[in-house]
Length: 113
Image (tube, rainbow, N blue to C red; front, side, top):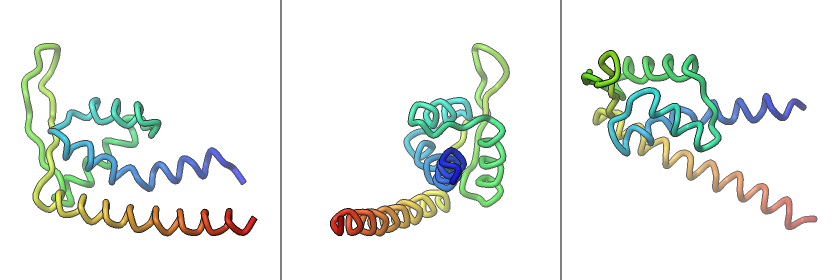
């Protein structure tokens, strides 16, 4: 079993949820999202995040606006749409159900030992 590969797959599985949650806190620039994910040990490279942001925008979960930057070109800030907020709430609920189920199985197994 390749533990690193398994861990990477688990992180990829929650990336959409975490990205939507970060943007829900406040409108976010892609590098801000990457930094927040890295600081939470959900290591992500730009090559992973940008396709996800594009897909979320195409699915009408995100929208963006351009803002001028004092230190370079204009920046694209993402924000949730109403559909994005609904999706985030659904994903949070699904995540809570999943973690409860996994915790139940793990704790049940430990109690048998």
